[in-house]
Image (cartoon, rainbow, N blue to C red):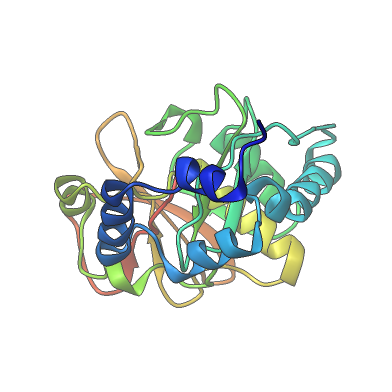
Length: 226
């Protein structure tokens, strides 16, 4: 006997516990208006990101002569307000990125070997992150040191990710990030525990170091969704 539409709906309908959990997640902010609209439209993260990923493939071919295919790359769930996708390829290092930047625009670094830094996310495989799409570092994180962010469990951008963002932003706009502030790369440390910072200063892209407990208004990290 064929199953009726009514019985099919009843068997597949959400349980009271699932409905309660849904509204709890809405209340907590885990399910945002943006995510709910995506669900209603039937959007998929991969489909939504296809154009962005294709753009990153063109970028890596142009600047590093790499033929990449990101069609199977895992994309983190996007959070509201985090609209800039950054794709880091396997084997990418700060020195490679700094050299690519310096070939296009003046640049200066405090250290002879940026590859000595250790980052929370390693480029031992291709990966992607989301950050806020803005020229200046996150105002929400002003007056917070790298130590503060670590204690609060706030994931910060790494030196590799920040240099890659610089190169991509310059490629798109001909302009530079952090012309007024400094990005604190809280996701990275040098061998002595210092934290890299990157900005556009005195006509150059500057990479310098800061004490992990250093903080002031103009020194701001960038939150990462990974």
